[in-house]
Structure formats: C-alpha cells, structure tokens
Image (cartoon, rainbow, N blue to C red; front, side, top):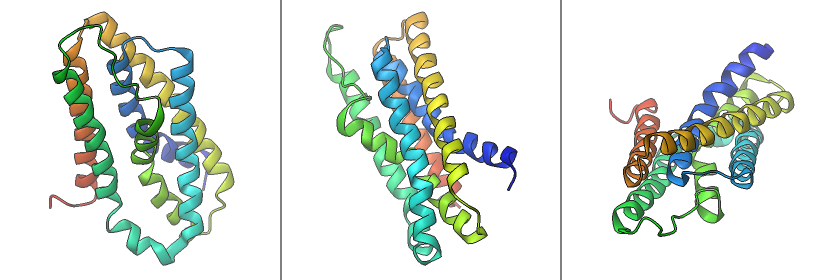
Length: 190
C-alpha cells in the first residue's frame, strides 16, 4: 500500500472528527490552547488505537463488529447531540456555563464515535496482510490536525456570525447527520 493511499484513508477517517470538531468549536465559541490539545490528542489517539484494535482482532471478530458498529457510532453521536441541543434550549441566560466537549465523558464518547470506522480499517489491513504501524501514525496525526483545524474553524464561525444558541443547535444537528451518514454508509436505509 502506497503512502498516498494511506494518507487518503487517513483523511477519509478524519472527516468525522473534523465535522465534530467544527460543531464543538461552534458550541464553545472561544477555544483555548488546552481545549485544542485535549480534543486533538484524544481524537488522534483514538483514530490511531482503533485500527490497532481492529488489526489485532482480525477476521474472527469482523463479522460481529460490522453488523452493529454503525449503530454504536450513531448512538454515541445522537446522545451527545441531544445533550448539546437540550443545553442550548434549556438555558435562557447568555452567561450560563455550557458543557465543554473537550472534557470528561463527552470527549471520550466523541472520540469513540468518530473512530469506530477506523476499527474496520484495521481489520481490513489484517485481512490484506498490511503492517499496521506506519498507517496508524499517519492516521493519528491526520486526525489530530483535522481536529485542530475544525475546532478553530467552528470557533471562528461562532464569533464572526454571532450564532449564539442557534450554533449549539446546529452543532447538535450536525452530529446527528454524521450519525445518519454512518448508518447510510452501512446500508441501513436501503
């Protein structure tokens, strides 16, 4: 497998992380270096670890994972989205604190949800007899870079457009749409 092919796979895998990072940046408004590092580190780490796990599991588990991985990803994204939307609708004051998607359980759930597809990629690498170590480094670095870019792009959009509460609703809807796309890609709708 060529380096260009691996980079293409890494970019494709990073698209969910990029979209979630944009939604997170919109939700946060102003993004600190610490928040950027936390989200980029975790998204990159999970994107790198999932192919290793998939590769290790190999073909024996692939039939079980492929039958429900899309539902797990959808469920995790929908849970976060509903929380995000509920917070934006439930708070009337502008200075109410918002949940930080770069902390705690929310960050872990988002990290898992955006990296489920990488598990299948690792399994396919095992089936093809491809060494996993160089690809996971590339996949992790690309995911971290796209997460950083997306987080700051979302932050910029929220400050320029002054979206406010609507931005959180939009971010929640984006997460749900990502989940629906995952289901669509797995043939749930036909």
